[in-house]
Every structure is written in structure tokens, then in C-alpha cells.
Image (tube, rainbow, N blue to C red; front, side, top):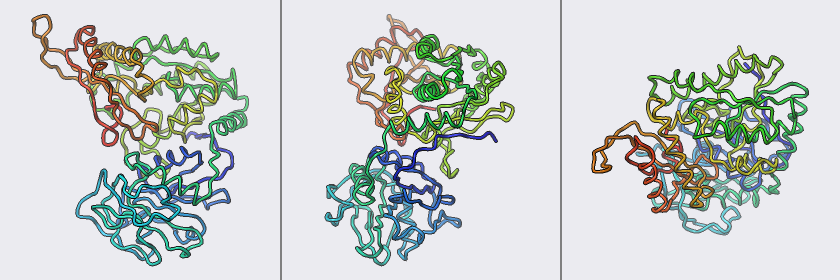
Length: 524
């Protein structure tokens, strides 16, 4: 196994999140960090003994049930009374089960928006929280009875026990339990509940800042890497760019970068990105490998297989480039939290896979490099904040994300040169019009998707039978959840008209109005 090096953060007060395998666990961390409170996620079966910096404990949700033969369990007695505890969904069910309450299997899964009603408003956890509020439910089991020395604090139209708490004086530190998910943006009072828990109840000072991370990261990289040389594959996106900025500050000319044209980049992207990186003072080479990627993808339509093939080809390029630089000891990557989680690469290894990421999962032994991933524990918006703190160019820091596999996951089905060329032109028109209408910075991510279906059209009094593209634009802060952007009709009309008139081979444009969840941001 190649050693994986992440950036250890400076000692500071923190919230400890015990992860039972939920996809939402990282959202809990994201929401806590939005409060400028540092937090750490640890798996339920291997979490450290809380140290003096731990101010509170949060128990996450889980895809599993407390009725499973080998359910996810912890020594709750070791935590009760020592720290304020917040149980969310499965965490609330586990507390109920272990302390003498009752959890029952529901007749049907409760998933989606619901309304909860507060039964008390004088508790510090519920301070300034609306008495009736929308929340996000996602559970198959239901708490039917709360433990002794606990009291009900909220119910909903579908379940009697939506939230409960320990009685005053039952424990030295209070315990709160929510059947719903405050971390999901659909829970309108969720951020306030988490703030009340972390700040008012746990007493966190809210001193987690970009500057504190950047300075610590640079110092740690200097110490860990020393005089050794690092190779970094740049993508043009914010993640790898921030890694480049950190490493450039830390080790200067000992950083060697390359930018791969995989044949699946956006229009003119290869030349433009190379120029920007050169202006940043980086040692960088451009590698034109488009043909090898497209050849490897011939006849492949399965999304996961496409991602794996693209990842494999990147590894082959890494190997070839590293042999040219025999002094290289490290390979750096811009892996971030959502990449790891969606690949089921979290610390529990128990989360359900959504999609694989080409930069998650390690390196082949033949590469003989140590792996450096300084952003692995960060979210997209945090990465941007750190990029600003590093003084990186605004156009790079706030550039819309672009997936590592590039247009390969925006072309549904088999990837062909023809399809990539059509999509590049359509996508460029969409982005041009967004910028012209001052909508580019109002959306978090926007792009076109090529659909391998043909539809009938009429142009110049003649029948056409050409391809379809879908436009996708979303608004988000964490990229774990997202809303589709309500782009103006006149803007969508201009984009559609230009694409149909300027891109021969496309005669129909549609707009994607799906949010995440249940859809993903990318189509594949």
C-alpha cells in the first residue's frame, strides 16, 4: 500500500462526529464547519478516546438498522454525562434502544420533507427555532418509546417522536435526539439547531478559519516532504489548483506539474489552462493524450466502467511522466471529501457507493510514489475559501467544477469523438450566455449533457433528425446537496436558439430541473 499523507490540523476545540456509515455524515461536518467550528469524523468501530479538545459528540445516521444482526454499536456509557451528545436519525434510535426505549420497524420507509411541531421552546437547544418547521426525514425504523429520564420535545404529522431530550439533571451533560436530519438543507431550522448544540450547549468559540488551515498546511507539508520532489496532475479545477498553490508556497520549484489533455476537455481548455498555470509561476508541462483515452473508451457505455477506464489511463500517464522525472518521490492529488464519500471511500468503508472517482482509491504499486492529498478532509466551499487565503487567481478559485473524467461523464452512453465535439460547442455557448447574463457566478455549476438519442426537427422547411442536449445548472454550497437553478426563460431561450443554429447535429435542447438528492449533479 502506498502511504497516504493528509494535512493534520492544529489542535483546537472540536466536535467529534461518530460515523455509522450514512451518506449524510459529511453534511453534518459541513454544517458544523459553516459555523466556524472544527469537527472530525471517526468511524463507530474505531473512534479515538475523546481528548480535552472535544466539546461535544454527534452520532450520525446510518443505512443500517438497530435490528440488524451485527448493528453498528458503540460504548454509549463511556460518553454519557461526559460530553453533550446529539443523536441524529440512527444515532437517536441507537440511544433509545440502548437506554431502555423502543424502536420498531416501520411499515414503510419515511423519506422526504415533513413538518415537525415543537412541544417546548424554553430549552437552549430550541432557542429561536420556529415552533413549526420543515425537516428532512430518511428512515425505515421508528422510535416508539423514549427511555426513562427523557422527555419528548417535538412530533410530526407522521410520527409521534420526532425529537426528545434527557431530563434536566439526568446526566451531567445533556443528550438530544432527532429522528430527522438537521444537516440536510431541506430542514429549514437545521442550521440553527446545530448552532445551538455546538455553540450554546457545547460552548465552542467558532475559531475555525481558512487562515488557520493554510498556515498549518504549509508548515506541515514543509516538514513532511522536506527537500523531496512532488508531482501533481492538474485538472484546471479549483481542487488541484489549490493543492498547487499550497505546494508552491511550501516547496517552490520542487513541485513538478503536468496537465493532461484526455480528449474530453471543454473548448480551448487545454491551451487556456496551461497559460494560467504558467502565469502562476508553476513548473508545468502539457501532455496531449486525447487519442489514447478515446481509443480506450470505444464501445463502452456503462458509466462506472467509463470512469474506471479513464482513471486507469490517467494512471498510465502518471507512470510515463514519473519515469521522465526519476527524482519524484510524491504524487499529489486534489481529492476532497465529496470524492471520497461518493466513492464509498470514507473511513467507515460502510457508506453506499454513488459513483467512483478516478482520483480515489490509491495507486498501483509499480508507481512507487507516496500519495499526498492535503484537501482530502475538506469540502468544495472550504477549498475555495482556502484558495482565496492563498491569493490564487479569482477566475481559477471560482471556476465551476469540472469532473476528472471530463466530458466522458457528460456524454451518456458510448463516448465518440463526434459526440465530444458537439458537446464542447454546445457547452461553450451555454457558459458564454451565462457570463453575458451575469448568471455564471450565481450558479455553482453549469454545463451541457449530450444525450445519445435523436429527435425529429424542422429547419429551413426541411426535416432534421439530430441529437439532443440537456442543460444543467445548480446552486449549492457543499456539492453534497443542490437545487436546480431557476434560470430566466429568456436566457434559456437564447442558449437554445444559439445551440440549435450554431451546432449542426443538435436540434433539441432541454433543461434539467432535478435537485440533489435524489439526482446527482453530474448525469453519470
